[in-house]
Amino acid sequence: MKDFPQHSLKVILAAPRGFCAGVNMAIECLELSLDLFGAPIYVYHEIVHNKHVVESFKGRGVQFVNSIEEVPPSSLLLYSAHGVSPALRTEAKDKKLRTIDATCPLVTKVHVEALTFAKQGFHIILIGHAGHDEVIGTMGEAPQSISLVETPEEVEALPFSRTDRLAFLTQTTLSIDDAARIIEVLKKKFPQIVGPKKEDICYATTNRQEVVRQLCPQADVVIVIGSQNSSNSQRLKEIAEAEGKPAYLIDQASELDAAWIASKRSVLITAGASAPEKLVQELVERLQNEFGATVETAKLREEKVHFSVPKELLLAEQNRKTSSVKTLTEHSRN
Image (cartoon, rainbow, N blue to C red; front, side, top):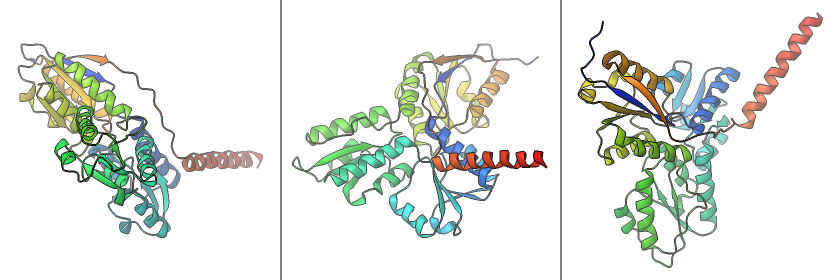
């Protein structure tokens, strides 16, 4: 019989956690595309920011590219959940690529807002992280009319006046608290600035952050399942640390350092919006096997959001089903 540590370890599973509606939709798009059209299928950048999801699709003939030049003419190209710029869409069209848009609708919302504000003569202050796929795509909607800021200090350095027509937007996966601080400084410096009718930080980002914040007092340590390049996963780790808890972001159970858990009585586990539930369960299983952990789920939010795959995929699937039924009927008659 395995000897467990003298103290009992309680695992608190945050809920909601893991996949959001946008990630589910993007993955469903790629799954359905593979089923309908077969490999190879090309995806511009990672379909979602998760190493395991990406590696799994690579093993099935999906090729992730960083430029349109890498995609052979007439191939099928899928745009990731983070969205792309109009310039890239034009480049794909000029190369006569077949395209499927798996952009999260909440990211598309920010793109539309940027385009609308720019057409109305506003200069847009985009709050986000430089180099993030979503930010690159959004700024591509109106590159001459958007300035990016990441901190309150960068807001103070902006060269605009109180007479300029200004608007602000945010990346969908930001820290709620960080975004609020920057928006507060923006409004103080530029009282005339306007924002979106509804905040841009997505429901899933908001829910996961609030759940971690509320559950932190019950935990001695926080483990976040997610990849290092996942913005929303990084924010969950940062929130836990801001609440005074040691926190770690890991891709999988094997990365857990037992020293993080030693002498701890409770561990809060959550997962970024692009992390598969399978990885969470593998971590839980390891904690049960090595520490005799007991597990409880703390569900503080309900999520019922669902995004449908693009119409062209639904139509292709319907056509295949119709064709299969027709073939079956003809075979029966013969």
